[in-house]
Length: 504
Image (cartoon, rainbow, N blue to C red):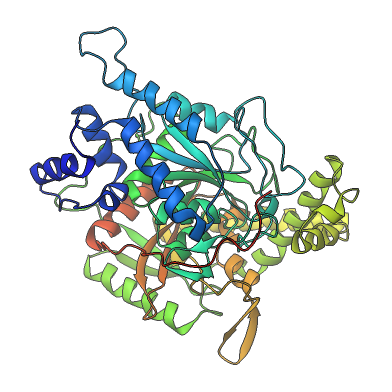
């Protein structure tokens, strides 16, 4: 078999795509490009998996994006994929499971994996090895994906920085002194750095979209309940979602297609569709309240440029009003605090094993014990009112989705607990949750995609929020934006000291 980059150079030259010149270029190829090479028998899933494992060994000591690298399992899955895809065309063993077949991906470490430890980023579960796969993992395996390992995360998914006291902080590939975001921070960092082709994470208050925005990749939170959470360690059952992270919208759609049960008559999310020469016409709503009350000047400038560009593309922009947005932050917090503490109490871990939690998670679990039943029920009532208002506004104004910044700030420094905006200091955690809580509270799909950079070279995310089951529409809008704003920049991690905590 030819050297990997030589193979990809030849193929991409034929398809008029700028060819890579190194193995790094191959690591940053799209799922679609790699899948085509597999089917042309110009590339081996085993060789590609070995390349990714080598990159993890080389770069992950700097990024700390993985907790467990399952090398033997990944190679066994790659060999199986190779046997199925590369068998003689007339042979009975040949089987094509779809666009993810043989593609190396990662999984957030709160998702159960049979015979591979699932720590949830905690000391308490450091030696927990599930006997069964989560439902989402079973679907990915059926699609032929190769699981490279389990990614680092904020402990028990209860935070937005991925600063983990037990396994070390995840570092942002664009600036290793900064956070990757959380709680799916390891997944986002691994995807952004070319250490996997996609990942599956969880999102309760922005935990897919926040790290996607801070790391300059795409992350999608589906409609609540559309992707099974069976076998996923919960945080807040009324808010928890499972969804994909990838470098492009199309790759995100491919992952979503694999994990999302199909509804009869619904369009395929991951099909190899392409927009026509004349893109569909969209109308986007920009809320006048809440999202721009607290925002850095640099992020605001990038977002304003995005709106100008969208108008130039003939996208209609409407100002809309959602008066209940200001109440979403508190309601989301009350629900999450109460439900997270309830789960940890039921599991027998809190308060019995309080000393084994990190300080920040332990304090939030203690906070959850102080949420009165009436406050929790009031938050649930507010949630229902907000759901109704959101869908009425979408219907009455005729907008296809809301367009807002994913986060009001770019990636903060590791351990930077407060950010100054204007003349006030704001909690980093509160800022990152602020613009993401509304979609979780409403249970609607939302996608974050890269939309630009501030002068310091840090990425900014554009968030699109749709109505229930509007994942396909959000992907269409996001793909149209991505095609009009191609950006080939990649993070270039620099040498840094060894991990800042000893893995358990």
